[in-house]
Image: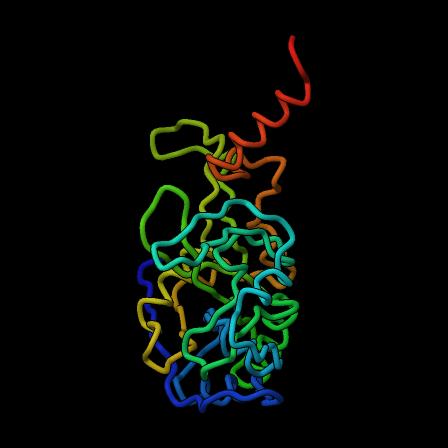
Amino acid sequence: MDELVVRGIPGLPEIAPGDDLPALIAEAAVRAGAAPGDILAVTSKIVSKAEGRIVHAADREQAITDETVRVVATRARADGGTTRIVENRLGLVMAAAGVDASNTADGIVLLLPLDPDASAAAIRAAVEAAVGAPIGVVITDTAGRAWREGQTDIVIGASGVRLLDDLRGTRDAAGKLLEVTAPAVGDEIAAAADLVKGKATGVPVAIVRGLARLLHDEAPGARVLIRRPEDDLFSLGTREAWEQGRAAALDAGPA
């Protein structure tokens, strides 16, 4: 890889339920000069809008509850509300289960797509028909990160892209065996694309060029990046883990 180019795709209209989003993205990609070997990064918000994942709710708390599979941590906020970090039905651990009220009309929230991998596959098929194969597609959403301030975009759905560049078993430049190195290139693509898409620019899709080596027709979807709770050293918040341990000790009684 000699060069990585990331640029936004302008010209997409405001998306509404029932719109043929794959066709709209394909047309915009052709106008923007997309070519075989490119990866398209698509903001999940427009996928949710096209698929009608819209909930009319003055208070999004019930929507968050409905999307929650497992509570990881909760914290009271200064404004009297509660921040909830939860695992949602897609297996993603996110604040508010990924329920989004930004860039929407008052009283409306957006849920994440039902099947982001399938959404990515539909977009990929339309774009490949328009510009030629191979093309990769990732569906992105914004998430916070343990140990770090701020948020970044991550992959929640994908088609035709290897999201883990598994280097285990190979050797580094010094000849040392790599035992755990597996860059999450899918999330890196999502984050790079967000630099040109932004949050309030009206550019929800970006072309990432220079990573054709990651394209693979049978690559697994975004769940390959989700760590199982039983394998996660931080599957609960600090306070929640302490409370769970204390409750278990009380139930066990004196040693």
